[in-house]
Length: 237
View (cartoon, rainbow, N blue to C red):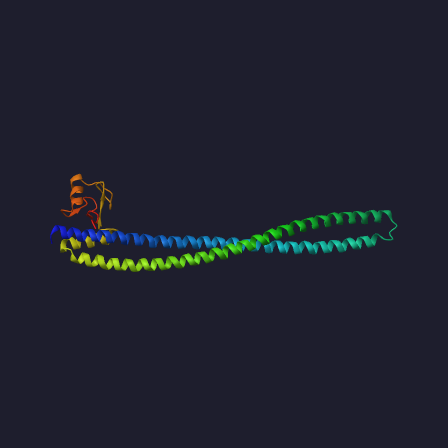
């Protein structure tokens, strides 16, 4: 096979390998993004669950305070009833002190209840909003994940086609170059690469200036002195 034909096949392989690499990178990106979306959705759900727990906890505390208010109110009524008809001054003073203490306790309980009821309204709103955000984000996450699954499936089919075409082209190479390309493909992401300003884009080591010129002219088969990848010019099509 003449060098020009050989180099043209290598150029095609290089272009296909780049397409394959980009497709694989996009598939990996899709997987990472799916994982990030799942983590974020879990955070939304955790926030919604916490808001619901906080709201329920406040409800329980309010019910407990209301029960205590009823008990104190009933006790206060009993003490007021006891006060009626008492003649002994010491007993009167003692009952009045108990009544005063109960009234202060009742005032504190009512204040705490009002404060908690206000807090409960706020928590109820936060819980409702958290659930809404979780549901909304969950729907968006599902839609995006389904789109990424479809995209990855399409990229997978594209990669299969690329692999098939690369295999066909490698089969067209002379036995020596064909075996060399196959060996490189087993251990490297690309077997055939371009250069940029004399640097191999596979290993990024610099090559002799004259060698870079030969690559650009497409006159001879060139391999990187460092990584042994085949070096070719970019497609002229």
